[in-house]
Image 1 (cartoon, rainbow over the protein chains, first blue to last red):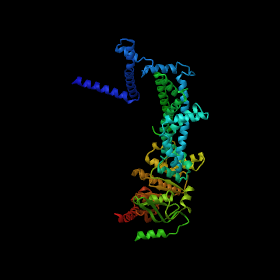
Image 2: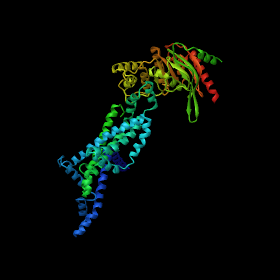
Image 3: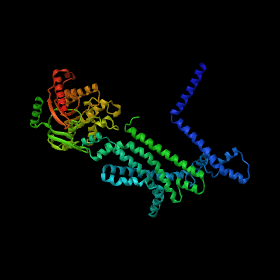
Image 4: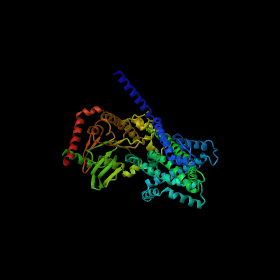
Length: 309
Length: 275
């Protein structure tokens, strides 16, 4: 009886430890991360095993499972590189290479990031401007909205080379064409959210402004714009991430000169899968950091606006 | 018979020079997909300077609509209406009235002080003056000390008081209140009614007050306008002469109960035909 109770207590103690671990953010994130690494390693072994076995057979070597696993995780051009290979490559190209070198991932990241940020700024401004127009002018809503929506039905991969070629013909190269592709992608969520946000004030609040005989402009600054802030930030998180996608896509048709997109393309030309994965992961990190930074701005702004919690 | 006599008396009273609101044969018809809705029909009413007029009636009787017509938030489709001798639109453009809605409608991202001074900001009054007037308005509703709080940090009753302070901040002579205490509990409501009366006695403002509570209407008003629905119209106007500094205890007096009875009779008469 007593021992039973003790085991039960022990089990419950274990459960509470588990739930305590899982209640924060670190616990669940770690679990997911570990699971991802396990899947990744297992995947790498299985994906790379056939070529490795082929190699053994051609060389007439005998092999054991342990050796196979070791070799599949250390190939020079694996189909799926192992996490530690990618980590080594990233360390080498980010920290161990001068950032002015064309082999430095920091250099390439900066090339992509600069056009991402430029495109994001222009896209956000354009998105807000369009939304303001659409909310205030009925004709603009009818004439612009269909174009805004249909603009996003064209695959960016199809239109990106056109933009690069056309702008190249008039002498615009490098940063600007890529930024324009980013702009093209990221104004859309901003416009859609801001239209909704600028229309979010309640009727009673709009009536209130009317009783003060407030002008459209005053109503915009005092009521519509502050009401739209939560909507704006939600869309900015999407916009900054796809702005990066736009910049990378914009680098593909330029013949792989510089940028994360160039690294991806060069990697695929020469079968450098490790390089591709390094560029991919770097892009993902950059996107994550930018989204976190937008979230941080959001919290700052909303806190200043007195939003609870 | 007596009800009718009162109605006629009021309707035939000439619009005095002191009329803040003068309404004659006013009607408002909403065109909806299901055909016209007669929100107001043949309304005659004069509100004089210093009056505290309550509009009472069942929902759908047009009492809020009438207030909104006075405020130029709706346009009448027939008849005449003037506020301080001009059209409602001009009156609104002159910022002739402060409007208190059913809900506080405070802007959540502004502190109480910045909410109260919002109309002054829109009227482009300098910052120092705004703050001074904001303080005075908050003092009138006994909310001084809450300037830097945000709306969510205040109770429902305090939020509604802040919205009254906002309507008072630019010192319009006419205060339009649309069921301002409808969502509050009885005790808070009693307290706010008392405060509102004091405020009215002190500031000499003209108040038009929509309610569906008989005791509230009788307690607050110098003139009670009883309305009935479909079409929205005035069926009785009752003048009371309780002292300006009355306390809540007058609600137990025979005079009070008599007026309340008459209001109830009026409401019942207005209701009988559609049930």
